[in-house]
Image (cartoon, one colour):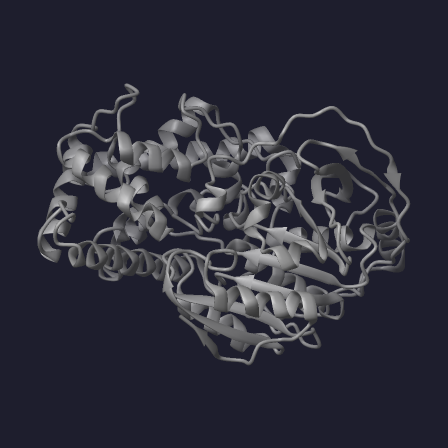
Length: 522
């Protein structure tokens, strides 16, 4: 499953509604102060020294920081622009790409720009901000220009392309609970084709979409926006971008909040095991909440009964896909993704109950709707963005995996122990990275952000996608990390109705008052 889907799923920003608002272009340009590039990093992700760039390279990078932006109105009070960055930061005179950027300017007392990333990898920051800016609480909106962007390889920022929509449908619908050698061979063939297609259809950019390069892009954005330091709010995978930024540019960190954090040091297998356990915990919380409501919990009267019925439904869908009112079949993979999608937010639990009840009677319409939202798929079954391809392109570089099908089979007991329901599904989702056509520059490793300003790291106790322990680990790794604990369910919390978390974040972003390390919110 890799790190999916760290995309932030909330009532205010359902991932199926991340489209740009079309509008005519009318606007001028801002002449912003020039900014020189920040000092080069002194250590790589795995702790080995990184040589200082040659003077010629540093000089060539300066032109990206000095570029002037031309903003145009793009609907709903938003402005849009393009920011040029090098494809390869070691070759700044080589190929470039344009990042798609949007902002909503404040009408209040401006403290600077607040850069946001909603997660992924593969989520459009432009679409997220334009669809869900009201999820940022009013005191923060009143003091910052809200700015977000499509990371390199994503959305409108030179998108990664791997396969046709039909092939992508086959890839996402493939059986990854293996009954026999034929199932394994089929998935192996599909995974190989997907990986090879990414290279054939994307070209050299495929090797340059790792998170360190996204963090370097983020610093260019800081510079061209005229901010001396980076004020940043990252959710889920966006916390990894923030953590890597703090490692590469510690002296440029301003006020940074990381919600639903990822442990930067985890390997692909370690991350997937922890995520499997996270989804299992979230499923059990969903079941417990249902059983408290004895009148309306129609999916079963006991924990064991509910799990048995789910297993039976998924096994049936494996043999013969469920029907749906749209006419599209709902195979086991789509039914599983539907359940997983609903576990991201307690606001989807009631809909999940109804969807499961229908699925037990052979109708997978509700689960297909949830899976489509998870995959950012439209109601015609098409894929309007490239998030399902970009997620592998980033993860296979950030956390390389080389396990063979036989090695995955041998490791299945660990995954099934972590999650009897979802473990096998997540384990087999690692296979495409085995065949990845470009090699990563480094292995995962811890970050310290030595010398950075305070960084607030928020963890939610029953977060299914980014387990609570990850946030604790990241806050401990960061020299200036401040851990904030939220006892609750769902993936990420700031911007929901939790007054305690919202006030802590507002006090820090607006007033610069960092919370006490270890503070707890219910």
